[in-house]
Length: 258
Image (cartoon, rainbow, N blue to C red; front, side, top):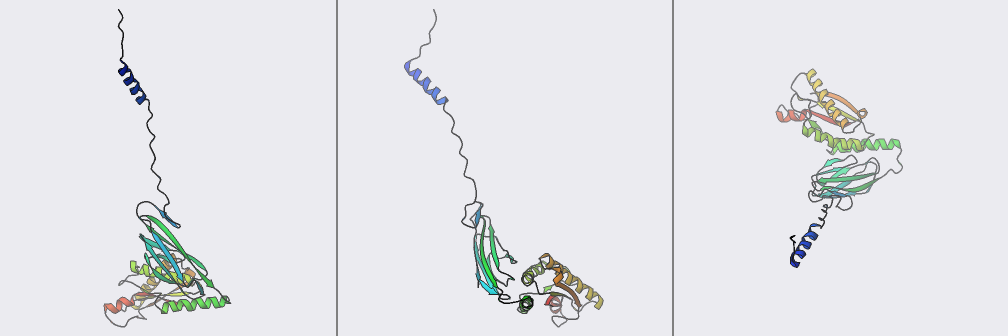
């Protein structure tokens, strides 16, 4: 006699339920939203930290040739700020005096762990009725005033050295901003030494110091043809005296308008 397999009604229902469950499709994984630009106008966020912000203003916004305006900026969540138009790297908050050669839009870029942000300010230069001769004279006078006001500074050297220190390079970068703003003014780079050493040796050392300063200025965008290098050795001390305090001020590269 053949045996039959008999399922109860309850077992049959259970079997159908298990089969239906096994046929269900697995849900598709949902990709996380992409990290992208989440800041406001002029800002790009990386999603790593809080997005930086920056504001930039100019006062006044309209000047004549040779006149100055002041850029003021404030930033948040920024590690560094760069302002184009010949200004360069600056602090995260501050001001800088500018005297643009022509109408210029300055853009400040703040960068931080959360991305970057930009802000712009325009300074319009009114040329008036100046001819080319007036413009050149204005550049010379304006740069001369910047030097007299201490905005263009000398750089100093260690004893028996023509090597630029980190501090000297920062000073030269600031000087280059002024030199670039007045392209019609030519510059004499003077090399000086303290009183120690022979006259011949100090003349050669002063020449090396002046050339080092001029070469670095050229790297910052100041045209080499505008600069003349002169060594005075120990002939023109900046500070009188026979102490290290005086000598340290006399080992320098000095800048004058010619």
